[in-house]
Length: 71
Image (cartoon, rainbow, N blue to C red; front, side):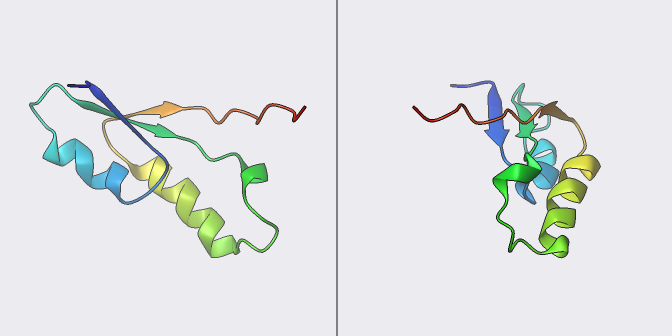
């Protein structure tokens, strides 16, 4: 069984650490690179992604990585 759950920002990263307390399993959240979002993404959606990651407790943050160039 794994010891780390990796997630993109969502409400899961806020609740999972509580559900997994005492199990030895940790949660890591992968930051979302703003360039990954389409131009149509609303400011509210962008704010949600940043806020849910910033307020999550007991998670390890993984920095966003730029996508490799195609080809």
